[in-house]
Amino acid sequence: MHIETERKFLVRDDRYKAQATASHHIRQGYIAHDSGNTVRVRLWDETGILTIKGRSVNGISRPEWEKEIPLQDALDLFPLCPGGDIDKTRYIIPAGNGRCFEVDEFHGDNDGLVMAEIELGSEEEEFARPDWLGEEVTGDKRYYNSYLTKHPYKTW
Image (cartoon, rainbow, N blue to C red; front, side, top):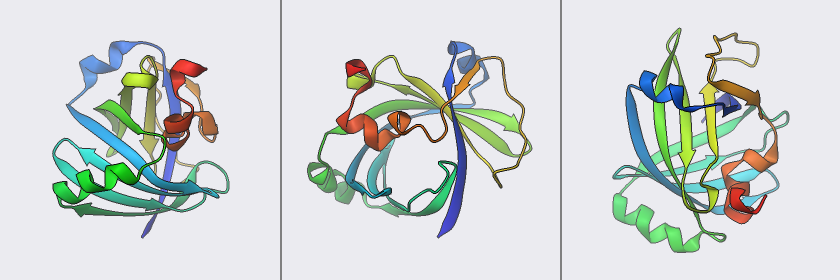
C-alpha cells in the first residue's frame, strides 16, 4: 500500500486536449464509501481494477491499495455499487518532472463537469500550472467521485 498525494482542479476550457498523449474510457462504482474509506471497482478501457482508499486527514493524501482483477470480476461487482456509477473519459497530459495531469471529462448525470488532478510525491511538491487549469477543489467533497454517484453534477 502506498500514500496517494493528489491535487484536484476544475478546468477552464478544452485546450488540454491538444496536449493529451492518451485517453481512456473509465467506468467506476463504489461498493462502499463511508467514514472517508472507499472500495471502488473500475473498468479502465477493458481492464478491471479494485481499489481501497483510506481516510484523508487534509484532502490531499491518503493510503491507497490497488489491484488489477479479471474483467468479468469487475463487471460482476458493479451491481454491488449503490448510487450508480461514474462514466468519464480521462486524458493524460504530461506535466514535466515525470508527472502528468489526468483530466476527467464526465458523462451521463455528471455531464459538463471537467476536472484535472495531479499525483505528487509530497504535499509540498511544486508543479507548473497550465493556463487551462482553473480553481483548486482539493478536499472539497462535492468533487469526490464517490460523492458524485449520489449527488450528480446535474443536480447542483
